[in-house]
Image (cartoon, rainbow, N blue to C red; front, side, top):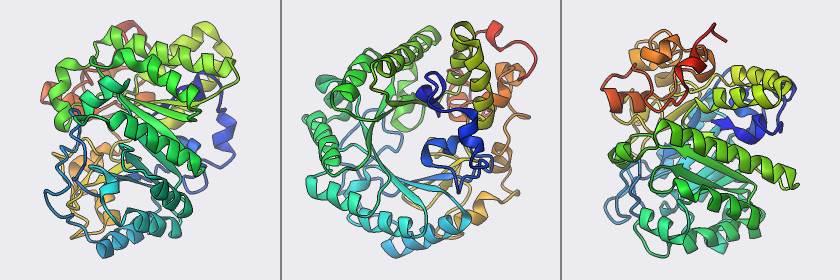
Length: 397
């Protein structure tokens, strides 16, 4: 996760993170990526069921009536107890569509009562006025609502006509209750031209936060490898995101803007600032070192709807245990699980351009799920890295 507004627009300074000693239990949510102890943010895909049929769904979601959820409310609370005791700072309720579970609000409330921050990732279509009020009342920290572009583009992606309008209504309902809400957008060839539309939306609707996700080849998204942007297209989109973020800051309408799932974005921001503002570039380099790049299997983990534990939500073909049989806290630190142990520090194992990149300490080897899907080699270079050979050469930073 690369904070474009934090880094490029100076919304965060190195001293901001150091003020809290960089302990994840003390850092406010917008600084968690700079934690030095990297307790995992846990994505819990609490159901595989969903009311939409998204073409890029990493969970390969199924119809809400297809089956019952495999983890009961009682067992879910046992899992939350373990996560809270382990020190996981955030639980992100996802799916499928988390709001198809009737006990979502109850479980969010329970997690918060145990000292965790609770957030949800949703398509937004089921957030009625009353549901938004419930989520606000229990103390939910954040609601991330996915959009794929304008109405025509979004509805085509989501497979259900009217889903765009329903999602925007969900945004409106959250705002009416004073619940922090942001947008989520996954970039690919089908919708990269929609980035300006998303910036217009967050300005017009006064949405404070947006995350732009690079495509990861997983679930139904794996069928979109051929529709990922090429390197120049990716670079152009990231530059556009930076430009539009700066425009909002200059207009006195700052937003929190992040890019997710391609840690080449960090060095790219740094290279651009070297030309535009060398002093800020030095500060950004320090922040990027604190961030440490991709933290799959270390700073982020995933529990599936069936209890299986994964390094992140995109690596479901690698399972390290099951919380129905063994606590997450025990699985996560078990050094006998070779791949999970190696993911705690990927740098000695990555190959190709990643192995010789001067930004390896900053990027962390980027996404293994993409490398494996593209090269059939878990430790191969990430094919989505758009940095040039010239940009990655030199002494390690």
